[in-house]
Amino acid sequence: MKNKKPSWVTYFSLATVGLAGTGLSSTALAQDPYTVGIEASFPPWAYVESGEFKGIAIDAMSAIAEDQGFEIEFQDMPFPSLIPALAAQKIDILATGLTVTEERAGAIDFSIPWWETNDVVLVPEDSDANVFTAVCCGASVGVQGGSSQQAWMEENVINNSDVDVSLSKYDSYVTAVDDMAIGRISSVIVDDTSAQEYINSGRPVKMAGKIYIRAPLALAVTKDDPQEVLGKLNQGIMNIYDSGEWQEIVSSYIPGVVAPAIPGHMPDFVDTYDKPVSGLPELGNE
Image (cartoon, rainbow, N blue to C red; front, side, top):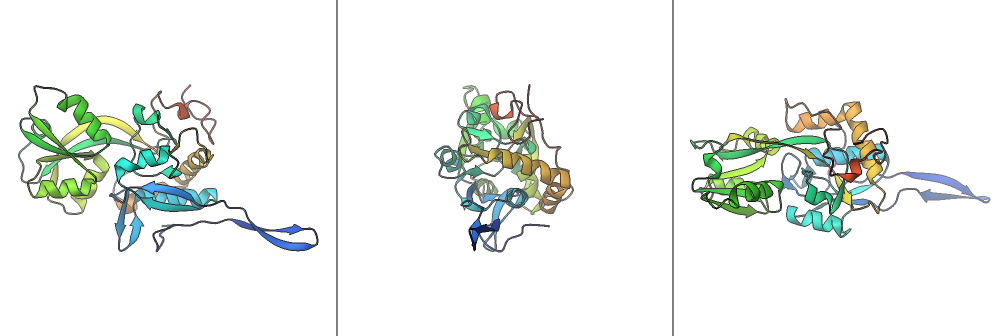
């Protein structure tokens, strides 16, 4: 497996030696590192272990940087802060389990999709709740603040005055699952990849059922791509997919899971996926 780095910051550099007049000078071709915003409490996409960033997004972003010959450094932020930071150009790239939504597409630009997810309702392993009773009928449901799961609950459940349910918003899904384990909330809605990670790690939770949304996940950059990095990200994603490295990364974190084909389906509202796509002009919605 490539790109396992023993530090909080991952760097890749490219330099060349050139001639200038009669003297020899060294000129670094690489620009300043791109700052990659992550939420490092979101396994298996990004998390901290023994002082190191690990996860699918960490390894994949490092592989893309190596493939495309640029430098990166990771910056850990709470999830609700990531999109505003990207929109304000405080970070250059957002790399986590980011769901593509129409609202987000109006504020940031997405890469080609690299995953597809459905949501899962998690309950304690001794619960008899099903996917319906776990999100209604007096249930207290945990979601991550600013997430697509929060938006789904508010649109489909909370705004329905006939449903008796309370919604608790957390900075981290790890905290939400911990609160469910001690009875502070009765269920948690999370993407199916993360749900499987919690189960595989031995957490006392189980899936009450799935909410089938078939949402694409992608990397993101600031609107209109002022750093001109979107084409590099798209090319890098396709290259690590075609080489098999993407599947190796996925398998190292969630064994037995076959990564969806890349590129996946992208909704028509994502204008960065209008043909021709940056870096991959043969792709895109007509």
